[in-house]
Amino acid sequence: MAELTIWCNADLSPDAMTLLESVRPAHNLVFSSQKTGNLGSGGACPDLAKADIAFGQPDENQISELGNLKWAHITSAGYTRYDNEKVKSAFRSRGAQFSNSSSVYDDPCAEHIVAFILAQSRQLPASLAAQYGDQQWAYAALRPATKLLKGQTILLIGFGAIARRLVELLTPFGVNFIGIRRTLKGDEPIPMALIKDLPAYLAKADHVVNILPASPETEKLFNGETLAKCKPGAIFYNIGRGTTVDQPELIASLESGHIGAAYLDVTTPEPLPPTDPLWKAPNCAITPHIAGGFEGESVRLVEHFLENLTLYAAGKPIQDRLF
Image 1 (cartoon, one colour):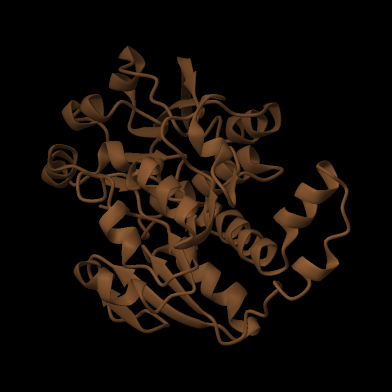
Image 2 (cartoon, rainbow, N blue to C red):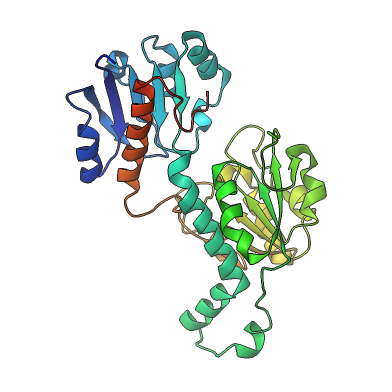
């Protein structure tokens, strides 16, 4: 294949940059002066107009207007900014491709959820609270409160790469799964239902795992009415997006005890201000949007892109293509 011009605005580690530079001299690299991480957009960049391929977090409006852009590969699993008809129709009209980095983040995000679930089942937050608090030996209270996962029901809301990996990791524990998604594909390895039927399944779940992206349809989906339909004492987890949850209503559900505990990796806003009441909500554990992180993340992102570049150059289907 002829030389391709690859534009990049990803904020990469030195090792990852060295790896990306290995595409030279077969291809040309153009770096934006506005480096950005996975949660931001660097805005429009004049140099993108010269590119055949965009790698990073390109401006969603600009990539829909550039007729020369043949492929955009983003460095995140989430793609809310690009999930609209303007971008999709523009790519379809010129036969361009769009892919994300889901394959990079399925393992860390799934392992983060497993850590949350096991921490709750084995009473780790309560034990740590005692260690860092009054140092009382809470044997009588905590030992009978621990639970085995065997036989418990886990409801997975949003069934993509992360949920599939989570099923693989948790299956040995003998749990029951129910998956929820907008459209059923027929290849899901567990019993599935549509998002419109969510209320009926909330009452059956011991663990409610929210992996939904941000969108107008998911905005505050987990409001007071939805949370009230959960099984009393159910544990709620969110590693999707903070906008999918009505946080004051979640706090109220925790305070009433209807939701037994909440484990959140995402909030609204981010960073969550120190004065936000969510920090002090009962039985609420918060991690600062780190579920997808891992040592070597930046290098793995470039490896994934280069794997796809090889496929693209050979005219073969690329991984994690969305449209």
